[in-house]
Image 1 (cartoon, rainbow, N blue to C red):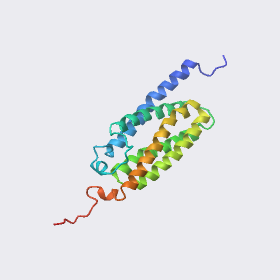
Image 2: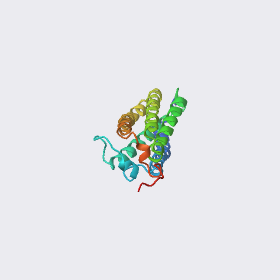
Image 3: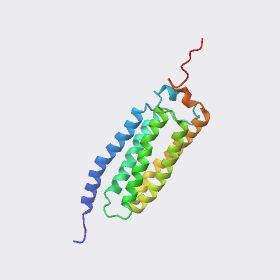
Image 4: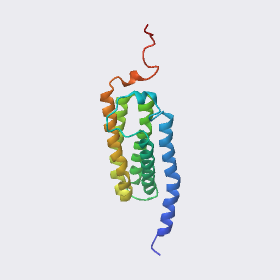
Length: 184
């Protein structure tokens, strides 16, 4: 016997990793959005001028849920690739881009810092590209699974930028951030 593990054992290892990783990433992504008050239910966000290409409010949680599942599956494939050259770097890059992802909603929706959020999403794109390249060296399919996420990040960055341009006073629209003076 020359195999370290059978194909069935490898599939089970992947399934176990995916059953732990995918729900964790999905939970973290949803928690970041919910705790930040993201979406159309946010009065500040509802008051912002948005580009015509902005998807309807229901599309964001659907798309993000699908993307979190995809990147979780990709990450699980890399996590189980013990001994693969570059695995540690790939895992590290993934963790950094995920941390940036989880930071974006609090900065944008809760902090009302549209320009800073744009900088964060640009960093997220750069780290996601680096993650995809690192994943490709470990598990090619994992890299392919990250591409829809990268495409959505690019679209989200464009939306973020357009909202920033269209709302130069976005932070002032936030309740409680304006003047405490009452005009009579």
